[in-house]
Image (cartoon, rainbow over all chains, first blue to last red; front, side):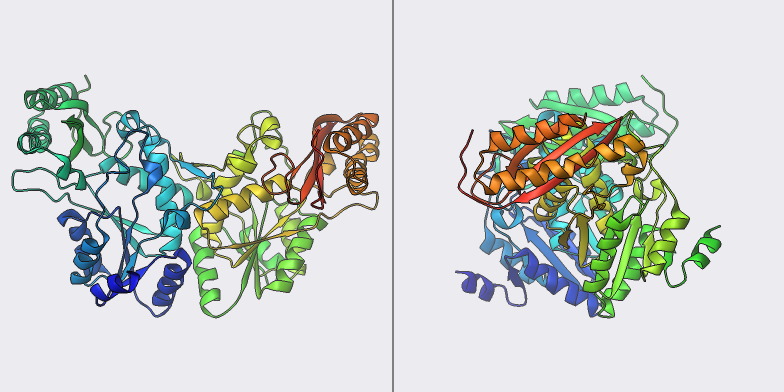
Length: 294
Length: 294
């Protein structure tokens, strides 16, 4: 099975053991090669592949991890039904010229008796954390663990999970993790829906409605440029999402870095909600401007 | 001042910036040199120097950090009065042939707006954490941060802070930090008192009494070998410590790794208490044996 998988991915190397990939990448670095890392949970779509392409453009060798991290799913969330198709993922990555695929077992990432958790605080507070308590503890802990196994120069994250990018960035700064982060633009369907492995859960009718999240943040950008205040922008996003039956988790305009109240720097419109039980999120950067607080 | 300090430490190099020491040590590693790391809070005594000597025996280059970490002190603890003498420390280390001394500013370790905290759980629960809430969050976070700045092959810790060694070991395993830990035996005064920078706080009379902690754990080892049960050993340690006026924080026999109830593996006798406001701790390894639970 392993051999068959590896044969299927000519040019890629499938590694299961953290220490094996670590030593391989250290050897690549010693040989003067620049290493890029794209951490994923598999079920790869064009959004992931855009990260891979960016990494390949920047770096000599690309490493992609495929690990459905149990600790970032809450009780009752979709950990068990989260889409998994390693063979398809490996084929996609091989075609992209990815050199290293790291797909560890859960026990290789979480050793027996593991108890360590990384709490980022700051940008991890609120929004996704309100809806998914403990989610970012799981994310931060696994990303730190993956960064130890995959000693890349640069790691690539998608802007779609904006809060996640701020959480990882805060952790990297605070712990001095020796990796540069690059956040890449969200890939979208023709109607604007942000690509997500979870889009596969949507019924055809909900799939139609789902485009409203991207419409809401596009509208936010328009209103923001026209000078509408934070409350006005938020209210407009809510109305749009509600018009399509989205059960809103949040629809806010916040500081793009801290996710606190809008300050002097750039802002971001963040939206999240559910359609037929499927969680969807989207966001859009808003330029810095004079702010009228509500 | 910096120049004067550096001149004082012929052969040692004083580094203030995390990125500078990181690159220097990566270069040393690339040149095939084995790097050992001794993290300290300064106020160096023979206990620290024994760690340095062990590192020097094992490795080509030794790096010592001197950083009085504010986050591992609680409110009302001795952070501000903790002994500091960088010049004396540098002289001691230079005489030991230490190649790198890393003495960062607080802001170099904790960047503006830092919010990330590492919670180890497991062996971090109880004992010191009961007396010093948040202490091991501060320890784990700073040790992880220091390990990023000082990419050594091996790090050396003293057995005197036994619970700390278990906390760091758990974190290293859980996060896959690429460093080997070596725990070195406690250095002692002729009367048995474990060396500690805080011993300097003791009045002459309390200094006399302080030897009772080492006597208590030595007595524990004797009773343990003779088959006394956990409760009996603990009670004997408490009586001895109370006889010298120690205000006991804890005096226990627990599993040496998990610090949970004594199990099949080796155990440890852990004691801590206060004499005249000065906290003292000690411990002693106890061999695995058939256990009679209380």
